[in-house]
Length: 357
Image (cartoon, rainbow, N blue to C red; front, side, top):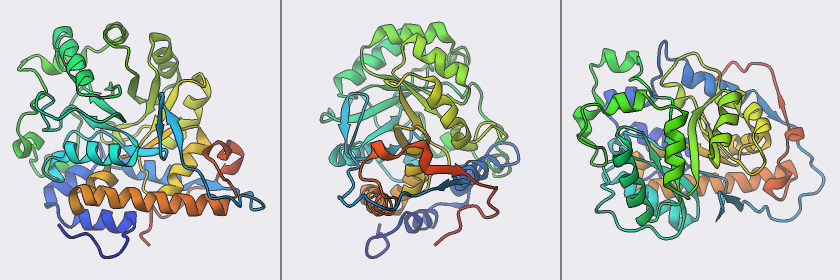
């Protein structure tokens, strides 16, 4: 696959990736639940976050490096887990792992990807984590955790916001069934009660998972401050602010709206991850000001992979890196530690949703 010429922007990669997908897969990727407004609401909430620069100073080249769950990373952005990522490019999970490790970034690879944990090569030391759906009993979960540790995953991210398959009108209109296009994920058990296990996830099950591993654990799908506090009490090392890209419930609060509230109620040592509507490096900087430690890209990284496989994902991260450095200079900050709440304000609703440049 040929990437756009030169150094493509994130928007160019988005458009190029969309152009390589079938209409049904495009609808599956971009659509939301209910009336479909969730993805647009995530985006609109980010566009209401406005910078208040401090323009005197910031003369040294910006440092994007930080620490995430005990590992040094080169920048505060990475990949969100996507179960259907293999629709973007063959061996997508392998490409994601390799690019993240090569660039020294943190990110998440989904359990539903078609990369078989049993046959994959061990990872180099990195901040790459495996995302889990709890679709098996404790025996299967323990086996999966130990296998993943042996393969070198830094830790685990547990998605808890998907008790049911969501009502997505675009997929229903297209009579689209994702697994008809992908086949059964090799890392799930042959268990007719798989979704029953997922529906039944409770705090006691999460406590049992905590007892299975000493690797970092992140709880994904949180919007309510009470659940963020409880996750820390149960022993999770990070909370992941997410509404599943607006794909599960159409009318939740946007993740940018929930982020600051959750960041304020968890202890400083608890990592805060966020996704939902993020498209470029300015969005990452906004999230850092609101309290995020790591911003993950979902649809954007899927479309970068669709545009050019691993090279497309490299190009996305290169574009984010360049834009982030330039914008930090223009904001007058030299390090991520200087991205504090006083640098942003919440403005009035913005009428356009991510106009292309």
